Image (cartoon, rainbow, N blue to C red; front, side, top):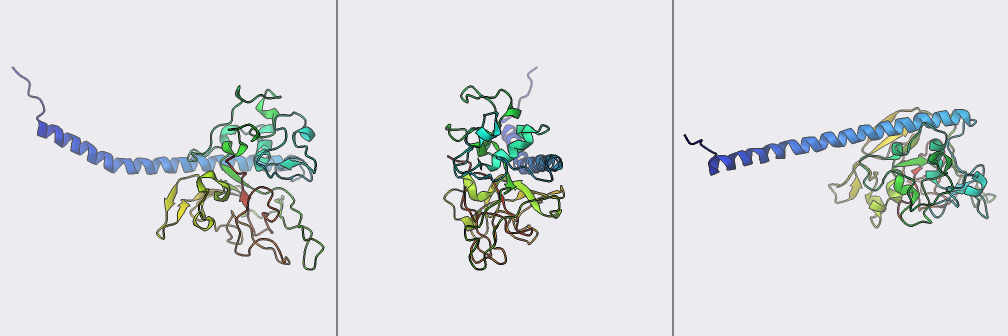
Length: 311
């Protein structure tokens, strides 16, 4: 007795049903994955926040700042000798200790309890896990002995390529116009133990120094690029939002960067009262490494940055 098989019409109906179900389920699955990645990213930032508080408790209430007193933000996305076990040699330059934001983050790895993968947002397609590899000759044998995520002096090993998260600028920025009428000695604000609990400390990567945003008008990219990009109704290219860590340890998802204590853009700096020079009062994106005016202007002006992630 012959067994009856599927007819062509029946097969086409089955294929059509499967295609319909896939069309219905895929957006839901993608949405669930996106939400899961956001939660994982939020967990990373919460863990980094806890590690920063522990670090501050052991360092006279000072938050991670590499290079020691007087260090400043590097102008070339790298430190002098990232793998030299001696700190003074690792950060030595002719005019002071030149440090990076990533080397500040790396202090949490050096003190233990934080791993390299905690600096990676699963949605961030522009980063990878930092590893010691044969192409990267090193003076140290353990990650806890290094000072940064590699060195930009070797092609392909730009430190910011291994970090997804922006950080409050921890360096003192001297006002170059100090001494002139109306000018104050400093234009930077540093996080302390007394900083308010709603002050932004870290977040998904700043869009203004991001390779994905290169060549785009700065006004068109207010959000971080970490969790995907989209086009707004008025035709602007932007990220869809960012997770933000606050001083109190809370982490929240925000679809706008206007969430500082003064409802300012956490990726731009403002102009402090009493200054005749400095950032735009509305907020100007940091121009890049070593920008003397790219600094938080007070306890209501959040400014979260990361080093450039391209060479």
